[in-house]
Image (cartoon, rainbow, N blue to C red; front, side):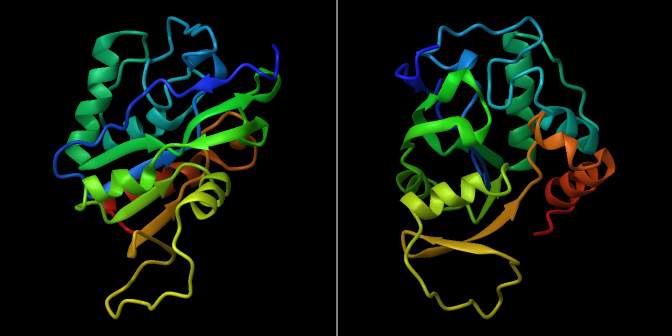
Length: 206
């Protein structure tokens, strides 16, 4: 693959009514992207974290006790949207377009990045209070590069967040998940991932 082929993000943000949290990742694999030829498998899902190799929806299905189909169907997409509605959580990615170097999907292989307008999205959905990064480092790096207000910032008196970021003059709580990508799974146990997802998505603890 030529490194000049620009991948365009295939999905708009999905923010259900009443969402108070926003899941933020980086970019789908090259084969999902609109300039990459789109070559989904039968057991991919045409939605965020839809690759058959990504464990995000498997983890969320287990901790919420919600059966999900892992098929390239409209039903599978709608199941995920319904689950997000029930959890009052939206979902988006930080990268709007990029080049997948050598067709690789890991964050380190994303170059020539153009971000999605996260700052405008947050203005449109003022009920969102917490951001959930599905990458331990890359999402935070890109948000601070493109959108974070320059500090220092005052700490709210009632603030129990372990980590936060200021965007548009407003603080947001931050949770950084273990990445659900297949590469990241090598270094984190299944029990540790499940426990974290249970804490974040079920108990609501930051």
